Image (cartoon, rainbow, N blue to C red):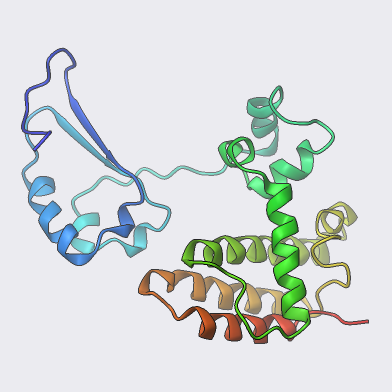
Length: 218
């Protein structure tokens, strides 16, 4: 309805739809008409961190523009005067090339929370500590980052990588590079299914079981 109105001063009317993959099938089908016949001088931007989750009918009518993580030196330049420089390297690494995440969130506190949940896994806790789907997604994101970094450390022997995770996983991960890759993709598969309302307890039990297989114990 807003796009059908004439712009007062600007040349275009612009609509930005964030988290576009959250549209269910009914919303996507209703939106399809606008994409097929957009009003004159209008621009519709769909933002999605999981574009493959969008229906083919939506994606086929859009021009894809990919945004890639910034290299470390550019991240540091963007955040140089806004971060505690003692923690800047760690925070920017955890943000994975997304300075907005480093500035808007608190990656170091997120790691402490991640570590506490990991302790529950080590203790074989049966009750899921996650409150909702967003917490599951956040924890899996951090877990996959940790596993990726550990795999990189196995290849490069970069000791600085392990320092970031010393609080989260003091006893380390066990397994070679191939084992880490397998664990990474299993967690990634679970994450891709979260929009299908996975049962929290079943998800916890499964994630716990596969993580315990790769946690090195004293």
